[in-house]
Length: 286
Image 1: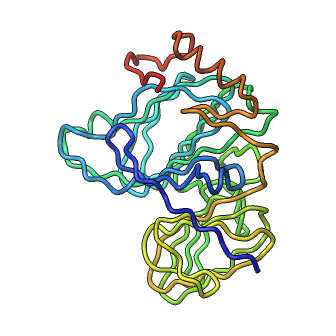
Image 2: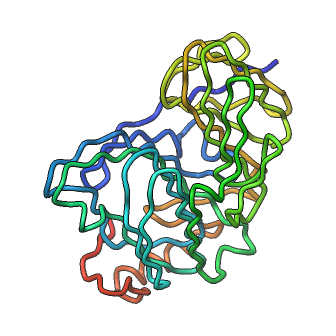
Protein backbone atom coordinates (compact mmCIF):
# COMPACT_ATOMS: atom_id res chain seq x y z
CA UNK A 1 0.00 0.00 0.00
CA UNK A 2 1.26 3.46 -0.90
CA UNK A 3 1.38 5.91 2.02
CA UNK A 4 -0.91 8.97 1.98
CA UNK A 5 0.60 12.29 0.95
CA UNK A 6 0.50 14.93 3.71
CA UNK A 7 0.31 18.55 2.55
CA UNK A 8 0.87 21.08 5.31
CA UNK A 9 -0.88 24.40 4.64
CA UNK A 10 0.57 27.88 4.29
CA UNK A 11 -0.69 30.53 6.69
CA UNK A 12 -1.83 33.62 4.80
CA UNK A 13 -4.25 36.53 5.07
CA UNK A 14 -6.88 37.54 2.52
CA UNK A 15 -7.97 41.16 2.98
CA UNK A 16 -7.38 40.74 6.73
CA UNK A 17 -9.04 37.33 7.12
CA UNK A 18 -6.51 34.70 8.35
CA UNK A 19 -6.51 31.48 6.35
CA UNK A 20 -4.69 28.18 5.95
CA UNK A 21 -4.09 27.14 2.33
CA UNK A 22 -2.94 23.58 1.51
CA UNK A 23 -3.90 23.80 -2.18
CA UNK A 24 -2.32 24.60 -4.53
CA UNK A 25 0.97 23.10 -3.37
CA UNK A 26 4.25 22.27 -5.07
CA UNK A 27 3.65 18.70 -3.87
CA UNK A 28 0.15 18.47 -5.33
CA UNK A 29 -1.59 20.83 -7.72
CA UNK A 30 -5.08 19.36 -7.53
CA UNK A 31 -7.27 16.67 -5.95
CA UNK A 32 -10.03 15.74 -8.35
CA UNK A 33 -11.36 19.08 -9.68
CA UNK A 34 -10.20 20.95 -6.53
CA UNK A 35 -7.32 23.31 -7.35
CA UNK A 36 -7.61 25.70 -4.41
CA UNK A 37 -8.52 25.15 -0.76
CA UNK A 38 -8.78 27.95 1.80
CA UNK A 39 -9.64 27.29 5.42
CA UNK A 40 -10.97 30.60 6.75
CA UNK A 41 -9.90 30.30 10.37
CA UNK A 42 -12.44 31.07 13.09
CA UNK A 43 -12.14 34.83 13.54
CA UNK A 44 -13.96 37.14 15.94
CA UNK A 45 -14.67 40.54 14.40
CA UNK A 46 -15.50 43.44 16.75
CA UNK A 47 -18.29 45.92 16.01
CA UNK A 48 -17.43 48.03 12.97
CA UNK A 49 -15.21 45.40 11.36
CA UNK A 50 -15.81 42.33 9.22
CA UNK A 51 -14.68 40.46 6.14
CA UNK A 52 -14.59 42.63 3.03
CA UNK A 53 -13.24 40.96 -0.12
CA UNK A 54 -13.49 43.66 -2.75
CA UNK A 55 -14.50 43.13 -6.36
CA UNK A 56 -12.18 40.74 -8.18
CA UNK A 57 -12.31 38.58 -11.35
CA UNK A 58 -12.33 34.85 -12.14
CA UNK A 59 -12.20 32.61 -15.20
CA UNK A 60 -12.22 28.85 -15.73
CA UNK A 61 -13.38 27.76 -12.27
CA UNK A 62 -16.26 27.46 -9.85
CA UNK A 63 -16.01 28.88 -6.34
CA UNK A 64 -17.81 27.17 -3.46
CA UNK A 65 -18.14 28.93 -0.11
CA UNK A 66 -19.32 26.92 2.90
CA UNK A 67 -19.49 28.39 6.40
CA UNK A 68 -19.48 26.67 9.77
CA UNK A 69 -20.15 29.91 11.63
CA UNK A 70 -21.19 33.40 10.59
CA UNK A 71 -22.69 35.01 7.51
CA UNK A 72 -21.43 36.54 4.27
CA UNK A 73 -23.02 38.61 1.52
CA UNK A 74 -22.23 37.39 -2.01
CA UNK A 75 -22.66 39.77 -4.96
CA UNK A 76 -21.49 39.18 -8.52
CA UNK A 77 -21.52 40.61 -12.03
CA UNK A 78 -24.31 38.18 -12.97
CA UNK A 79 -26.64 40.23 -10.77
CA UNK A 80 -26.67 37.81 -7.82
CA UNK A 81 -27.02 39.32 -4.34
CA UNK A 82 -27.29 36.58 -1.72
CA UNK A 83 -26.76 36.32 2.01
CA UNK A 84 -25.02 33.03 2.86
CA UNK A 85 -25.29 31.49 6.31
CA UNK A 86 -23.72 28.56 8.12
CA UNK A 87 -24.39 25.20 6.48
CA UNK A 88 -25.40 26.76 3.13
CA UNK A 89 -23.61 26.52 -0.22
CA UNK A 90 -22.72 29.55 -2.34
CA UNK A 91 -21.77 28.25 -5.81
CA UNK A 92 -20.47 30.46 -8.63
CA UNK A 93 -19.23 29.24 -11.99
CA UNK A 94 -17.05 31.88 -13.63
CA UNK A 95 -17.03 30.77 -17.27
CA UNK A 96 -15.19 33.25 -19.47
CA UNK A 97 -15.48 36.26 -17.10
CA UNK A 98 -17.17 37.03 -13.80
CA UNK A 99 -16.46 39.38 -10.91
CA UNK A 100 -17.72 39.07 -7.35
CA UNK A 101 -17.42 40.34 -3.80
CA UNK A 102 -17.86 38.66 -0.43
CA UNK A 103 -18.31 40.68 2.73
CA UNK A 104 -19.96 40.70 6.13
CA UNK A 105 -23.60 41.79 5.64
CA UNK A 106 -23.76 45.55 6.37
CA UNK A 107 -26.52 45.17 8.96
CA UNK A 108 -24.25 42.92 11.05
CA UNK A 109 -21.28 45.29 11.13
CA UNK A 110 -22.42 47.06 14.29
CA UNK A 111 -22.24 43.95 16.45
CA UNK A 112 -19.60 41.35 17.41
CA UNK A 113 -19.52 38.39 15.01
CA UNK A 114 -17.54 35.26 14.24
CA UNK A 115 -16.64 33.81 10.83
CA UNK A 116 -15.36 30.31 10.16
CA UNK A 117 -15.56 28.33 6.93
CA UNK A 118 -14.03 27.02 3.74
CA UNK A 119 -13.73 28.35 0.22
CA UNK A 120 -12.62 26.03 -2.54
CA UNK A 121 -12.14 26.43 -6.27
CA UNK A 122 -12.97 23.65 -8.71
CA UNK A 123 -11.39 23.84 -12.16
CA UNK A 124 -13.96 23.71 -14.95
CA UNK A 125 -13.66 20.96 -17.58
CA UNK A 126 -12.12 22.25 -20.80
CA UNK A 127 -15.49 22.35 -22.57
CA UNK A 128 -16.88 24.65 -19.84
CA UNK A 129 -13.90 26.96 -19.34
CA UNK A 130 -15.23 29.64 -21.69
CA UNK A 131 -18.94 29.07 -21.16
CA UNK A 132 -21.44 31.41 -19.49
CA UNK A 133 -21.26 32.21 -15.80
CA UNK A 134 -23.77 30.89 -13.28
CA UNK A 135 -24.67 31.37 -9.62
CA UNK A 136 -26.81 29.28 -7.28
CA UNK A 137 -27.46 29.25 -3.55
CA UNK A 138 -28.36 26.04 -1.72
CA UNK A 139 -29.96 26.22 1.75
CA UNK A 140 -28.71 23.83 4.41
CA UNK A 141 -31.96 21.83 4.31
CA UNK A 142 -31.39 21.04 0.61
CA UNK A 143 -28.09 19.24 1.24
CA UNK A 144 -28.55 15.48 1.81
CA UNK A 145 -27.18 13.94 4.96
CA UNK A 146 -26.87 10.67 6.84
CA UNK A 147 -26.38 9.88 10.51
CA UNK A 148 -25.49 6.38 11.67
CA UNK A 149 -23.20 4.67 14.18
CA UNK A 150 -21.77 7.94 15.46
CA UNK A 151 -20.93 9.35 12.01
CA UNK A 152 -22.83 12.30 10.51
CA UNK A 153 -22.19 13.10 6.83
CA UNK A 154 -23.46 16.06 4.83
CA UNK A 155 -22.84 16.05 1.08
CA UNK A 156 -21.81 19.62 0.25
CA UNK A 157 -21.26 18.94 -3.47
CA UNK A 158 -21.07 15.90 -5.74
CA UNK A 159 -21.75 12.33 -4.74
CA UNK A 160 -20.53 9.84 -2.17
CA UNK A 161 -21.61 7.65 0.72
CA UNK A 162 -24.94 7.04 -1.10
CA UNK A 163 -25.70 10.80 -1.08
CA UNK A 164 -26.01 13.27 -3.99
CA UNK A 165 -25.88 17.05 -3.53
CA UNK A 166 -28.03 19.38 -5.67
CA UNK A 167 -25.05 21.71 -6.33
CA UNK A 168 -24.55 21.76 -10.15
CA UNK A 169 -20.95 20.51 -10.33
CA UNK A 170 -19.42 20.17 -13.80
CA UNK A 171 -17.50 16.92 -13.28
CA UNK A 172 -17.41 13.94 -10.91
CA UNK A 173 -16.93 15.50 -7.46
CA UNK A 174 -16.82 14.48 -3.80
CA UNK A 175 -17.13 17.14 -1.12
CA UNK A 176 -18.48 15.95 2.22
CA UNK A 177 -18.57 17.41 5.73
CA UNK A 178 -18.14 14.69 8.36
CA UNK A 179 -18.63 14.83 12.13
CA UNK A 180 -17.57 11.74 14.08
CA UNK A 181 -18.14 10.76 17.68
CA UNK A 182 -15.18 9.36 19.58
CA UNK A 183 -14.40 5.71 18.69
CA UNK A 184 -16.55 5.77 15.54
CA UNK A 185 -15.28 4.49 12.17
CA UNK A 186 -15.89 5.52 8.55
CA UNK A 187 -14.79 3.53 5.50
CA UNK A 188 -13.72 5.84 2.67
CA UNK A 189 -14.37 3.80 -0.48
CA UNK A 190 -12.35 4.06 -3.68
CA UNK A 191 -15.36 5.12 -5.77
CA UNK A 192 -13.62 8.39 -6.69
CA UNK A 193 -10.24 8.33 -8.41
CA UNK A 194 -8.73 11.03 -6.18
CA UNK A 195 -9.58 11.77 -2.53
CA UNK A 196 -8.19 13.77 0.38
CA UNK A 197 -9.11 14.34 4.04
CA UNK A 198 -8.78 17.60 5.98
CA UNK A 199 -9.32 17.46 9.74
CA UNK A 200 -10.71 20.75 11.03
CA UNK A 201 -10.91 19.80 14.69
CA UNK A 202 -10.28 16.76 16.88
CA UNK A 203 -8.10 13.70 16.48
CA UNK A 204 -8.48 10.99 13.84
CA UNK A 205 -6.46 8.15 12.34
CA UNK A 206 -6.36 6.77 8.82
CA UNK A 207 -5.66 3.03 8.81
CA UNK A 208 -4.11 3.42 12.29
CA UNK A 209 -1.89 6.35 11.25
CA UNK A 210 -2.66 9.62 13.12
CA UNK A 211 -3.79 12.50 10.91
CA UNK A 212 -2.30 15.94 11.32
CA UNK A 213 -5.02 18.51 12.07
CA UNK A 214 -5.36 21.21 9.41
CA UNK A 215 -3.23 19.28 6.90
CA UNK A 216 -4.59 17.92 3.63
CA UNK A 217 -3.99 14.17 3.51
CA UNK A 218 -4.21 12.77 -0.03
CA UNK A 219 -5.24 9.11 -0.13
CA UNK A 220 -3.62 6.54 -2.44
CA UNK A 221 -5.67 5.97 -5.58
CA UNK A 222 -7.74 2.82 -5.82
CA UNK A 223 -7.50 1.95 -2.12
CA UNK A 224 -10.37 2.00 0.37
CA UNK A 225 -9.21 3.32 3.73
CA UNK A 226 -10.68 3.34 7.21
CA UNK A 227 -11.03 6.56 9.21
CA UNK A 228 -11.14 6.21 13.01
CA UNK A 229 -12.11 9.00 15.40
CA UNK A 230 -9.71 9.02 18.35
CA UNK A 231 -11.83 11.85 19.80
CA UNK A 232 -14.90 13.74 18.67
CA UNK A 233 -13.77 15.25 15.37
CA UNK A 234 -14.87 17.43 12.46
CA UNK A 235 -13.44 17.02 8.96
CA UNK A 236 -14.11 17.30 5.25
CA UNK A 237 -13.39 14.84 2.44
CA UNK A 238 -12.78 16.14 -1.08
CA UNK A 239 -12.08 14.43 -4.39
CA UNK A 240 -13.40 13.34 -7.76
CA UNK A 241 -12.10 12.47 -11.20
CA UNK A 242 -8.66 13.71 -12.19
CA UNK A 243 -8.63 16.87 -14.28
CA UNK A 244 -8.84 16.50 -18.07
CA UNK A 245 -5.33 17.85 -18.47
CA UNK A 246 -3.05 20.24 -16.53
CA UNK A 247 -4.22 23.65 -15.40
CA UNK A 248 -2.37 26.94 -15.09
CA UNK A 249 -3.22 29.19 -12.15
CA UNK A 250 -2.35 32.86 -12.02
CA UNK A 251 -3.87 35.06 -9.33
CA UNK A 252 -7.65 34.45 -9.59
CA UNK A 253 -7.53 32.83 -13.00
CA UNK A 254 -7.51 29.12 -13.90
CA UNK A 255 -7.14 27.82 -17.45
CA UNK A 256 -5.83 24.95 -19.54
CA UNK A 257 -4.41 27.45 -22.06
CA UNK A 258 -1.97 30.09 -20.73
CA UNK A 259 -3.20 32.49 -23.44
CA UNK A 260 -6.60 32.65 -21.73
CA UNK A 261 -4.92 33.84 -18.54
CA UNK A 262 -2.92 36.52 -20.33
CA UNK A 263 -6.10 37.76 -22.04
CA UNK A 264 -7.93 37.86 -18.70
CA UNK A 265 -5.12 39.79 -17.00
CA UNK A 266 -5.07 42.34 -19.83
CA UNK A 267 -8.86 42.76 -19.72
CA UNK A 268 -8.98 43.26 -15.94
CA UNK A 269 -6.09 45.74 -16.05
CA UNK A 270 -7.86 47.70 -18.80
CA UNK A 271 -11.20 47.73 -16.97
CA UNK A 272 -12.77 45.64 -19.73
CA UNK A 273 -14.65 43.29 -17.39
CA UNK A 274 -18.22 42.71 -16.16
CA UNK A 275 -18.93 44.84 -13.07
CA UNK A 276 -20.72 43.92 -9.86
CA UNK A 277 -23.75 46.25 -9.75
CA UNK A 278 -23.31 49.07 -7.25
CA UNK A 279 -19.63 48.31 -6.63
CA UNK A 280 -16.77 50.71 -7.35
CA UNK A 281 -13.79 49.39 -5.35
CA UNK A 282 -11.80 46.51 -6.76
CA UNK A 283 -8.64 44.50 -6.19
CA UNK A 284 -5.97 45.33 -8.74
CA UNK A 285 -3.62 42.87 -10.43
CA UNK A 286 -0.73 41.82 -8.17
